[in-house]
Length: 338
Image: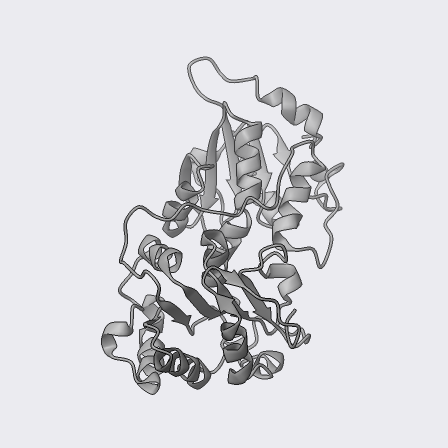
C-alpha cells in the first residue's frame, strides 16, 4: 500500500459506479485533538471532493466535527479500538491519530486500498511516508503529513462558525477549572480568586465544566462569591458549551479543549500551561487574542498531582494577562508568557 501523493491523487477518480468513494480518517481522541486537526480535515475535504469523508472518533464530538464543514459522517470509535465494519475497505485511510505502529495497525486491519500515514519502521505499508518530528506543534504536524504527501494544507484554518443555537453568554468571562488529568489542573482556589476579581470588576462570570466536574465548579463559584446560577458545569452538552465559548468576552482555563474552542471562535483567552509546552499545543503565535502562560518547565502530563511548573503560575500572573485582554484583542506581555 504505497503512500505517495501521486498515488493518492489517482484514487480520487476511482469511484465505484453508483456510490461515492470513502475516505476514512482516524482521530479517535478528545476535543482538543479534534480541533487541532481541523485544518488537515479541511485540506482532505478539498483534495478529495468526490469522497465521503468519514471521521473515526468519539460520537460526542460529531456536532463540532460537522461544524468544521469538512466531515460527512462521524462513526463512534475508541482510541486504538478496532474500526467498525462500516469503515472497512475504504478507498483511502488517513492516520491523524498518531505515529504508529498501533494506530497504523488499526487502519490496516480494516483493509483500506491506500494508507496515508507517517512512516514507521515496524509498518511496511507506511514506508515512504513523511517522518515524524518530536516537538512539532500539533496543528502543523498533521498539515505537514499532508503537504509532504502532495496535499496542500493551511495550518491557519482553525476557525469555526459559532453554533446557531445554544445558551446566551454574550460578554461573560468563562472560568473553566477542570482538566482531563490532575497534572494540568491549576488549584481551584486560584481559579476562584480570578473569578472573584472578574466579578469585582463588574464582569459577569460563569463557571463551566463536564458532568464530572460539577462539584469542582460549584466549589470555585462559592469561593468566588458567585451564585449557583453562574455554574454551567453539567448543564450544557458539547455544542451548547461551544456556544458559550463563542459568545464569551474572555476565557480563563488550563491546557484543555476549552482553550482550543477559544482559538476556534476567536474568543480572547488566558491559557495556563504546565507539563506540556504551548509551543506544542498552545494557541498559534499569529493569533494575538490568546495568552499562553508557561514557566518553561515541562513534565508528565499524566501525573497524579498538579505539575510543579503549572503551580509556579500565580493568580497575579493571570490577572495581569487578563488586564491586557481588550475586547477581542490582546496586548502582548513578555513576563512569564510563552
